[in-house]
Length: 616
Image: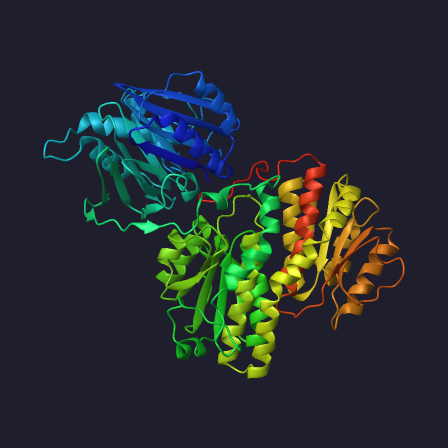
């Protein structure tokens, strides 16, 4: 979850590190720090709070070195203090280390090192690792031509249990950085006479678009002239240089108030990008180039399992509904974090899908590995080219919506819904969906960007509704069928960015317990689109009104509601069932966003949250 950045080159490192940390702040903003090699010493500045606090402190220091590392922290071990902020120095002052992940056996390491005379200044697991590197550096000097710095890191990591993405400086090695990863992302930017290391390409895209993605178990050795990669087993790795397909403008605000607002209003364009090139010439089905499964193999699949976490899990629930509805294949949805620790009975003809915007979600990556370990094919729906999930899956579908910076997912979620609809169509047309039904379905999916644009035009009115509801402490979100997951997503968005307690339920489940929460102080957001259960949804709304509850009803144009049922009304354009979840998502995104603004919340950096969950 933390942000890592490193620099080796000819320019002053400090300003480049600070710029990178600002672009990575969405990965953690409890504290931030930098360490710069200054001749034979390492100078460190670190502060609790946002990167701007660190930047002010750093400007008062004379950082002149051209090699350094920086970190923005999402706290795991130890409270939010200056002492616990990264980088951490070894007790001999020879090494500085930044770390994303969790060292599970740090207590035993610390006990061993204390007995050897090493001292500790923080509560973190990271400090145990930097002292262990120092221990190996002094204990086992290398004489066979190897880098003593690199070898001490490699030997220290042999004793680590847990996850890590690390970058390290050594006072004996000016102009050098050693980095390594295990289940925590690291990417190297290859620039013009400089190298930029980061946990996310957002930190380096302003300086280069040529990147090398490190794999688990690899160690990177950077020098001013070159870089090399080895495995933990000391095997040389031939690096593959990829190219980032987006530029720095995609990660800028571009006149918007914040990234969440920008990404909400980018959704029509994002959906266009997600569907581009994915339709057959006859307009009757969806095509995917990276599934790595033949039509015959797909027709033999008898069971699908979708795995995800958080917002991605909600998208999986929508996929379940659409695939079972149109392709008539049984689908199971599970939390990725739970699947890997259960012994779930699975049929041989099962195909797995995993969803993760970042492609680095540690629980989802672990579930992918568990499914593949059991011999199953796993396909990924993912937005990040070169991510761990993209590399380790058997095939998959990229979302192609560009970087999503806001912590609360918006355009990544709706593009996942769009791809879920296309997967349902792709499988359905291989089975028993007719040509004409396929053509109708494709037309509906192609209309999604325009439909979303129409809902976005209602933003001013939704903001007025938000103003009238920003003072409440509790809210309910209710829907049925494919809109029950959107009710869950609406409740999650409100919780994430406004800190209002909210719950999502199937509307028919209200009378089985949650109706006890209904009161004038607990409004309910109802999805009530036209369809065969419209009257049942209206009855559920009336049950709320009978108990003096306030209602915000989201329905489709042309639906007639009984007088007095809706205290607030939001109309959706009439649309096909395949794209209804996408269109219905927009009002609850806007409602949550504007409520959070009214409450003075920092929507891009909600408390206790980070964008990419890379610790378990």
